[in-house]
Length: 189
Image (cartoon, rainbow, N blue to C red; front, side, top):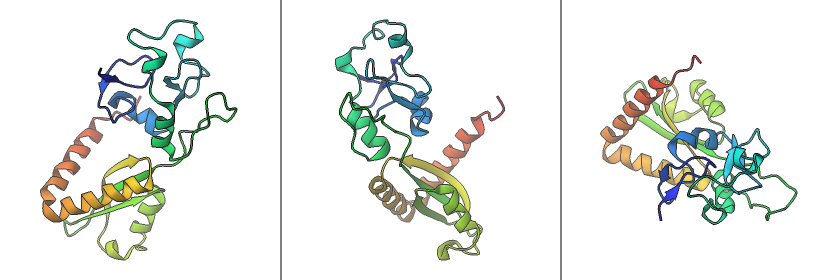
């Protein structure tokens, strides 16, 4: 059976190791989604229930309580914290935690790969010359991604460093694809 996005009304098929589709990943990564207590599917955090539960409707076609995403796994992926059992009064905060893996381009054309729980502060440290390996090399952020845990960030960082050592062209292609995607984002609503 194909796995679908964990958002309550989305029927897009996703890989078995994904929780949501690409359309909902941004909100998921930003902590704007949480678990609907009525059906167990993901919903917008601003609402108490998903629209189907709010209106007393059945889950969307092909959705059943048994096919919903595993709420423990969702919260673990987002936070690394233990999830309270169903019915517990504490709300699941999937906005906490997470680590950024990032790539900086240096003036000599080389790339620096790192990870940080506070990307903005870390970039300021690079810019202000507080990181020895990038001091005087005008580091510029050219790529980043978010992962739920520090262990995953360390693994991704190590993999990126190995790719950079073995085949820097792959890193360049990633950076080019990322910048092309970023140009498509309309920041003026």
